[in-house]
Amino acid sequence: VQITTAFYIQDRLGVTDPAGVVRIASLCLMAMAIVITLMQGVVFQMRRIRPQILLRCCGPAFAAALLTMAAAHSTPVLVVGFAILGLAFACATPGINGGASMAVEPHQQGAASGYLAAANTVGAIFGPLVGTAIYRLATPAVLYSGAVLFAIVSIYAFTIEIPVARRTHG
Image: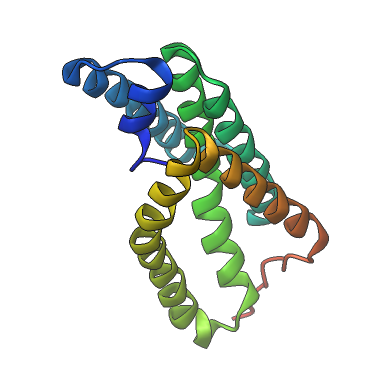
């Protein structure tokens, strides 16, 4: 999504001035970053939310963000979509990392962490390739396809048993 944001601003909002595209993209990315920071730095510190809850919230939030962005015909709506995307990322990171940590034995946690880091890297490699290819099909196609993917992931997340934190004795 971040790779195609500038193109989306040009194609969907009709902004062709490079400075205008940069300004709108900056607003969108700042909205996302502010929400992530507030959620992880303030809300999640005041209210400890279990990884199980975060995992089940992040998929629907991602889908809602992408659908909001796909429907955006104005800068404020696009910024709101990115803010919702920030909420999704804020839930996803601790939810996935915490869930993975609880799903394995203590001696396997390093390997699990490594797999998660590798998955992010693979996403950074293939995301731009796949995203721009899908974008060529239709302007909001990458957003709709992402929303469908996250809807499927959400259904899956609600059907699996997510481990609860183990208590250590010592």
